[in-house]
Length: 87
Picture 1 (cartoon, rainbow, N blue to C red):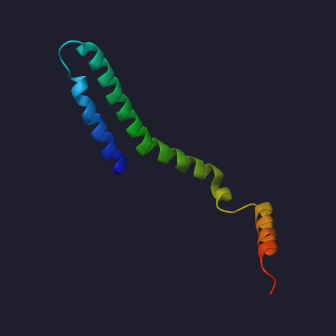
Picture 2: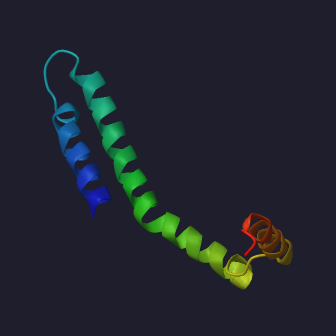
Picture 3: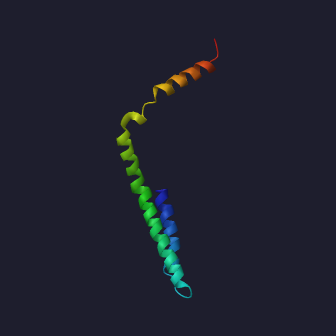
């Protein structure tokens, strides 16, 4: 929700530039429409495509992401044993 609120606030803030009239209106219109289109695309990308990308990568790698490697577990247990005070 915060992403949508920020994006829509920015888009609505640029709308006056996109519908401007008067001297230099063509340049402001071009910049405004480009910024609005870019924000709509970036919002779409951030809300829909990035989560889909993470799901696809998660399915491709499977359970490899959930379990630590044997070397990592051994190094952690050695480090814990080295820092454990003798009782």
